[in-house]
Image (cartoon, rainbow, N blue to C red; front, side):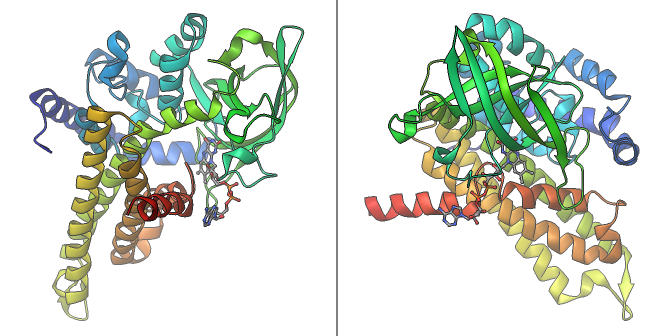
Length: 400
Ligand SMILES: Cc1cc2nc3c(=O)[nH]c(=O)nc-3n(C[C@H](O)[C@H](O)[C@H](O)COP(=O)(O)OP(=O)(O)OC[C@H]3O[C@@H](n4cnc5c(N)ncnc54)[C@H](O)[C@@H]3O)c2cc1C
């Protein structure tokens, strides 16, 4: 493995860092206050920032080069350090059209969508004109086991009719979200892993009812939000099915590999920034007649955090490299490993940084509280830690 980044990736890292320093970090406080005070309203400067990023070629960088003309041409390994840079500011990936869940949804449409689905939904998503949500999880069943999903997708008179109850649909509260990709069952009697399919549902389809936003530890996570949604006799054309009936599980596997690299690298960026903030803070505060930085416990926390961030980064780069060279299937074990290791590492590092800031660490004056919410939620979103450990442990025992 050679983790020396290519010249192309290095040049983009410099450009992205410069863009964030000039245009985004100066707005960090204003953005936080605005979205808190104006739920479900976009930050006024967002569209202008997106246009600027697009004009500078900092756009859709996430889509790997295996997508040919649709991709700006980076490998997962080349993109990984860019995701890390974006992770230092939670809302920045949207400015570059690189934010979840749109990235995963765009990959699904780019890889499995028909030409009609691509022109209607992928193109506006790639242009940043609309946003999307992914509807899998359901309140009535343990959704960490996706075979439990109950929502029905039934063929009737050349249309699919959808009935179900979803929640934790990230992005669905966003006024810019115009389309959902939903996972449901087309054939509940088939073999377990081919009962499910994915289908496209316009957000304004008749029978779609957004019941309420769910709060994450009290935060609305505006403007994206996480919605509870009921679907009652929602009818869509047959051509809205993605690929074929029974392909839902296979598509989900393809969707989650690179997305997990993105989440992990963003978390590494958040943890790295938390460590910088902690290091700066302990130099400027004194307690009991000494600089906080001189206490041994603080130095141990800083040193341990530095080692853990670096280990997690190397593991994630190894996963990105393996996907690039051998495909998602071969990289499955490494992808499980980063999903287990990185969010937990980020939670620990951010927690130490919060502690070192005292009261300031839990309020809106630093990004630390937002970082912690993100890292803690990812230990559940995209599959809880235990599910990845259960699968990884099973495979290690089997092949040992
Ligand atoms: C912030 C956030 C954003 C999300 N965004 C989306 C989204 O956009 N779209 C979407 O569809 N879903 C989304 N989710 C939902 C998420 O994917 C599910 O919450 C997750 O898959 C777990 O499903 P569940 O909540 O039904 O928990 P359950 O399946 O009920 O599991 C509960 C707990 O049981 C334990 N458990 C489960 N399996 C095992 C096992 N094999 N071994 C040991 N213990 C186990 C774990 O501790 C687990 O946390 C999001 C969740 C959060 C918190």
